[in-house]
Image (cartoon, rainbow, N blue to C red; front, side, top):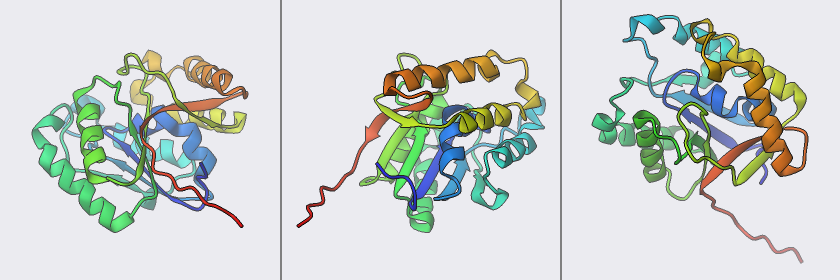
Amino acid sequence: MFFFGKRVLFLGAHPDDIELGCGALLHHVVKETDVLCVTLSDNQRNPDLKDVKDEHYKSMAVLGVPKENILLGPFTTRVFPDSRQEILEYFLKLRGDFNPDLIFTHSRQDVHQDHNTMTDEALRAFRGITVLGFDVVRSSHGFFPHFLAEVTEEDVNAKIEALSRYETYRDKYYFNGELTRSIMVRHGALAECPFAEGFDILRIVGQFEFRK
């Protein structure tokens, strides 16, 4: 699969999801692709998370994503299942506006109700487009990557640095740099390369090209 030169849509439920799930890959492709990063909730209704919106922008900047390539949606954390139709319509409009070639969103193995809902609606809204699911280690159970994308040590370090911008989550185990690196080492071992990020295959749409 070739990423470069494509319109690539990254979907996350909350600030930090995209960085946790595929920050290294995002850093790897951002300069050579048309990238849009969409997070459905900014978490600003929770007073304990008042800083995460700005931390998200700072984190994405480390990965090379400019603010104009980031969208924050209007949905409320933890109650996405109550807004299924609205999320579907939001995605359908996004499809018309951005017309992505490739989509990354949450794994099917994710048990968080918001993550699970948005993946279901993404598969409905983006029929006919390849969709790959990333792992957010805290809420994915039984995840095993069947699609592995090689990344560099520079990408790994950028992801760790990006996650460090979340002062709000500094004490959370799933923001630990050693854990982050170890996951990419393990996925790299599966791909027989130093580092990789892993995804499950939600839908692959391909074409066979025959050359004369």
